[in-house]
Image (cartoon, rainbow, N blue to C red):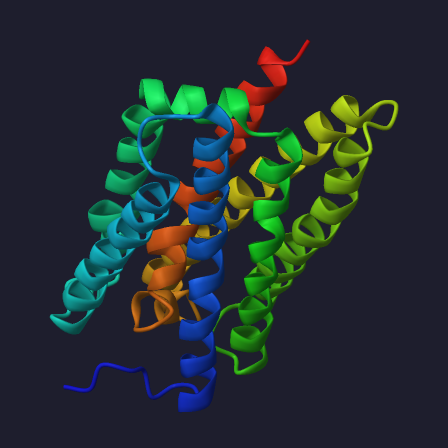
Length: 240
């Protein structure tokens, strides 16, 4: 049994794997800078390394589970969500989000540093690529792909507004953050809907997202992105 999917050229899969290094690095770098600003006793390099190690172990688990065929059966809810995304969201949102060290880092981190992390959502370009190869439904490809790209590109403007402390920056951050959260929730809902449609009627679903390496998208993105949006909300609510 081969690890990589044969439904798309190998070089695209390899490019996607390299692209996955970007969000992990951005999240870990933001935590490192927040640790430095908060002057916490833990070394910032240890914070960075800890987050990278956590995601490395987690994605290794996802890879092994995918190779063993754990996600191959089309079910509702999808098994990849049950065994990866939901537990990760519970851990990040229920445990990490409420840790004292997380609260200290968020209190010290400038909000623009939290916003610009979402630049990694340019990785949504791969939804468009998968759509071009007819591996996901066209409507899903368009909404998921261009939605992520739009949030990524507008994060630059919101970052600049907060960095320069422009008037109404907070209002625009609220609007942008809500739009970003809505985008990931909509993408997740559409994935569920197309999975149900595939089970009931056949046709193209989102099964490619259960194959390596694209299984990293549902395993990593929804939980991590929702967690990041919650962090920004906390920062906005605490801002004077």
